[in-house]
Length: 162
Image (tube, rainbow, N blue to C red; front, top):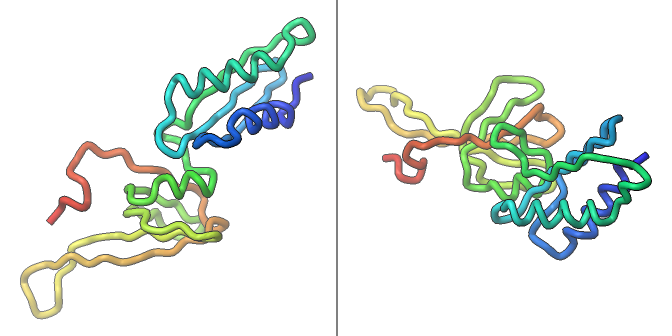
């Protein structure tokens, strides 16, 4: 049987020294192999095909038949690795903490054990009619978060907002 560890090792060997990195490997009972990879800049089809060819050439279909899919994380998938958080600094994210309410804002900083999301909202100042923009930083420990997803928007970016 093809093991997850063996596929991880093949993928890591191929990705070493590249801007690509392994996110996940799933090997199911029917020898269906799904490898999820990401890239520090952008994940291309050619990048995924190269890894797929490397893994496929290292396995023997005469010993055990298998199916292999190499793909990048979908837009709807949560961030899993520290490196994915680093890659997405400066982007809008949604964070669902294990306790508390969902927070949406700008991913501004990633540290060893936590990350910071800056929210921005208009609030009325006491004694004034006009509202003003308020920014607030929220720090989240990785261990205290259920999931974090990148928000996809076709509206003006936050930096362009007044």
